[in-house]
Structures are given as C-alpha cells and as structure tokens.
Image (tube, rainbow, N blue to C red; front, side, top):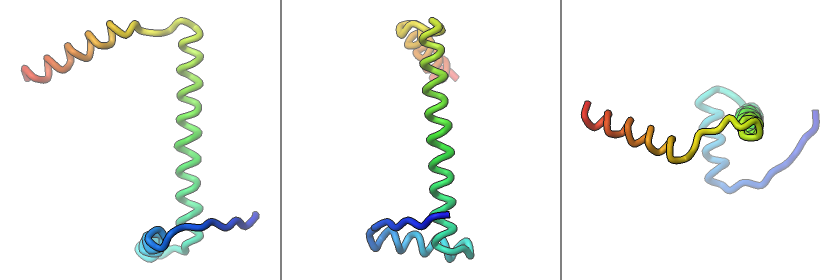
Amino acid sequence: MKNISIRIDDAAIDKLDTLAKAQDRSRNWVVKEALQQYFDQQDWMVEAIRDGIRDADAGKTVPHDQVVDEIDALIEAARKA
C-alpha cells in the first residue's frame, strides 16, 4: 500500500471530519471508501458506454424520431392518469 497526499479546503476537511465522526471511522477510511465508490461508479459508466458503442456498431439503435414519439406518448398518458 502506498501513501498519497491531497490538498483540500477547510470546508471539505470539516465535512470529512463530520462524516468520520458520525460513522465512528477515521478520515482515512472515509476517503478510501469514497474513492472506491467513485471507482466503482466510473467502471460501471465506462462499461455502459462501451456496451452502447458496441450496440451502435452492430446497428442496434432506435431512430431519434421514434424515441421522441414514444416519450411524448408516455408523457401524454401520464397527464391523463
């Protein structure tokens, strides 16, 4: 494991300390947890984008006009409900 250092403003440190205290955890734990959640989200997003590109390359797309028509129909149905 390696150490890194970052510079953050006083307000962010206060928030970090508040979260750490509320969870009975260390600053380090809160930062590591936040980073892991960020990495997980980014990994998911990158894979979703890659899936979308693969689908587009394979011709699995829906024309824009069709999407707009379907959304308009959903909105209209919701208004009537």
